[in-house]
Every structure is written in C-alpha cells, then in structure tokens.
Image 1: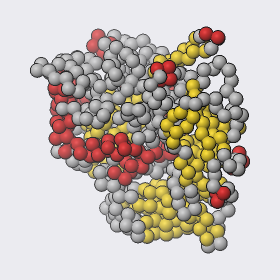
Image 2 (image 1 turned 180 degrees about the vertical axis):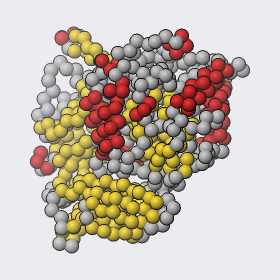
Image 3 (image 1 turned 30 degrees about the vertical axis):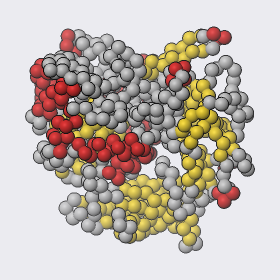
Image 4 (image 1 turned 45 degrees about the horizontal axis):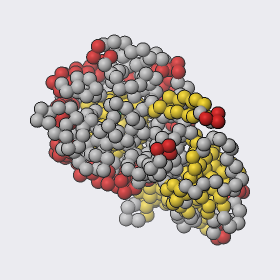
Length: 604
Ligand code: BDP
C-alpha cells in the first residue's frame, strides 16, 4: 500500500486537527444520521487517554466516537478520492454522512476507502466509532471480561496481557488523497546487488488500475540526476556503480512511476528506495556482505500527552539521540510504528527490526519468573486458549504490504515473548513464518523474540528463525541485585545457544533494569543509576565473548507508561532516557562502548 503523498497528479488533504469526541456509554444507540451529541473535543493524531484529565475517559474500555466535517474543493470533484487512516486503534467503523463506508480491525496498520460515491457538496460529516477492546482473538492480546452495571449497562474490562498502557484513538494521520481515475495502485521494489561489480538489478513491479498505454519508470539518484528509464509493469532496471544504502549512511534512489496515455503523464507516484543486501550466513548477519552489529533499542511509541499518537518531533529527537550514542538500530517493539517513522529511518540509515503487534501470546503472563530459579515446570495452555491465528495472518499481510519497500527494514519479528516453550507453539508459528517468507518480496530474515522461559532446551520453535533474538533479565527479574551470579547465568545460557545452533546469529532484543532517574546508591542497589550501569557493563562483557553474538538492543530506549501494578511506579523505568528524554547515567557508558564498536565488521 502506497503512502499518501502529493505529486504532480495527486493532492493530499490532511484531516489532522481538533475533532469532536465522545465516550459511548452504551445506554442508548448513537444515531450516525445525526451529528454526534457532544461538545467534547480531541486532538488527532494522538491517543485520547491523556488529553482530558478525566479518569473515566483515560481508563475507558469500550467504544468511543470521533467526528469532524470537511469540504472537498471543486477542483478535486472529478478525481478519485480516497480516505486513508494511518491507524485507528484497535477497531474502527467509519461513516461518511451517516453511511458506513469501511471497517478495519487491527490498531497499527493503515486502511483506506474510496469516498466519491458518498460525498456531498459543501460540508461532509466524517464519523468514526472505535473500540479499544482486546481479547484472545486480537493482537495485542488482552484479558477481556465484562459485567452488568447500572441500567443494565455493560462494563467492559481489558486487562492488558502485556507491559504497556493500552493507549487508543486515532493515532496516526487521517488523510484524503486524490488520484486520477486511472491510477498507480502499488509499487513493489526488489533491489539486488552484485557487491563486487557494484551493479544493481532493481526489479520493479507496478500495479496500475485503469487504462494506460504505458507505465514509465524513471530512476533518479540523490542529486536528482536520471539514472535509468524504462517502460512496463514488471521491469528490471540496471544501476551501474550503485551507491549502497548503508547503516547510518543512507543513500536513497527515487523511482518515478508514471501512468501514460497518448504520450501524456496521467498519474505520477514517486517511491524512494535504497539498494542494500541483507543475508544471514554462518552465524553472521550480513549487510552488504559485511557482518553487521546491532547497537540499539527496543522502543515504544510513547510520550506525554500524545500517548501513542504520532509525534514527529519526538521521532526526530529519538533518532538524533541514538546517533549521538553510536547506536544504529531499533526494534518496533511491540507493534508496527508509524509510516512516518519508517520513512525517517530509511532517510537516516537506521536499521529496523519490524515487529507485528503479536504480544501477549502467553496465557500465564505476569512478572513472576521465579520458576526459572526453582527450575519448576510452568503450567501453560496458551495454544489451547488463543484464537489469534486470523489476526496474526492479517497483520503479517498488512505489515508487509505497507513496509515491503523500506531499506531500513532488515528483519521481521513475528511475535514478542510468545509461549514458544509450550505445547502447540510450533504448529501455531510454522504457518506464520511460511506466510511471511512467501509474502515478502525482498525475502528478509525472520525471527520471533524469545522469552526467558524458552531456554535452549525448552524452546520448540528456534528451527523457524534466521536469528535467535533473546529477551533476558538475569540480574533483574532473577538474581535480582546479584550481578555476579547473573553474569554466570548469562554466559551459561549464551554458550548453550551458540553450541546448539552454531549457524544462527544470536542477539539480545531486550535486557534491562528499572532505574529511577536521580536515585543513587553507594552500594549499587537495584533501581539506582549505578546498578543500571553495572548491569549493562556485565552484559557487554559476556556479549563480547560469544562469537555468534551479533547485537545488543537494550530495554528500553525511554521510560514509558504501563498499566498499574505493584512492580510499576508510574510505568516502566527501564529507559536509559527518562520519558522526557533526559539521559540517565548509563548513557555515557553505552555511548562510549557503542561509538567504539563499528557498525560493520565488529565480529569478523
Ligand atoms: C518483557 C517484555 C516487555 C516488558 C519487559 C519488562 O517484552 O514488553 O516491558 O519485559 O518487563 O517481558 O520491562
């Protein structure tokens, strides 16, 4: 699915701004033929939760309504007009002038609908009903329950089966874009490169809808100079002396795709792309033929006031903070991030592990991992209870459809901390990995992020992954405060993985310790800034001993909001930056380490 941009033939109308807003009390039905009966307002894009200072709204589980009016300029009336949501979290029913025009489930991927047939002259009323409910059929997974309140009103409850606040709303831009009636619907770009001759062969497939005499494709370099031109909907374009897209040294070409009629350009779309090669070979993760070392983070889309809503200034700042530290990558934990962020990463050369919203696929999820110390078997029936296959397939389709052309995306993460140690997990995941590999035109490596219970002996799904991606909390959830034993345990386990899977690269996708900014301890106690630094130092030491260890993405970039719980004080404090992006002490140590580790060739 193409990102909506203005071109010589297309106009984009941004519907961001202040919308009408209403919580659905479910006392009487809402009449979509009428304007929403509310004076409350809400900024879009943003989460609704932190904008009103009303507890009932902040914690509302159930249905909510948004509405605004817009008009379409006469000049655009004869164009094809498409209404597009960057995301609507988690389920959306969309009405235009009182008629339902589309529906979408899944809170982190875009969807769109043609609106010409529903438009009125003058003011048009756009109404959106959202649900933020999550259960065992949705991704993320929520523990859903309901009870009857006063007047028989249903009170919904979602207990997040994951460790971040269930922010919801119109999180990403809502736009109307125009195209001519005959238009370019999609573009798939697969660059292949011979690293020795520096010659690229770029396969470009165009899906054009309507009648064109010709589809013309022109490639431009970064200076705007024409590199190649050809015609067709399935073409191979050669680029000599190609400039590679490298980590932190991005180079983007532009493919200008034109639908032509009688020699005239009717529809134009411009898609940027980078040429780079990603491979997993003999325990290494290669980018452009050289071993890449991941330095970076698990993150969240999370900020004051905006919640999980798009915040481009934060995105730019976060990437600048990463670059200043010598980091080169992050994972979109635990859901697909905004398209704007993915485009920024392409531009900035930030390497991304692109994750689905499959989090919480572990029925017995809580923070008690004591079984790891006692060696007890944990009882788990996740794969009998979960009914997420359909949602999982859908989001894999939508994510690949959206992100397939991004140079920054080097790997797909199919899930975070699923019960891959439990009976039935292989049967659940095998078809999803096959689907991903089949759908991805660039055939990127795939992984899932492994939970601590899924030890080398217990895990049932490692055969499916190209890279072993581990979340480990030795010295935090286990061996709390005992970094000496934590170091031994870390080493012991990593050595086991290395021996059992000598051909698979291994990386950490999470490790961290809650740290209260400004809390110091002469004894290096847990929660202090000293402890956080000691914790990272010990991990680094072990990482450097393991030959196939190809990357460290710590948890988390910044402190973030979670649900309440006795192990959370105003959220998760494992950030190495606070939620305001002030550095904790450890940032100096990590910056020093990372600036001394090259992006390529650290572990030959
Ligand atoms: C892991 C999860 C992550 C949590 C983190 C933690 O993947 O979402 O926030 O641990 O406990 O279980 O801090």
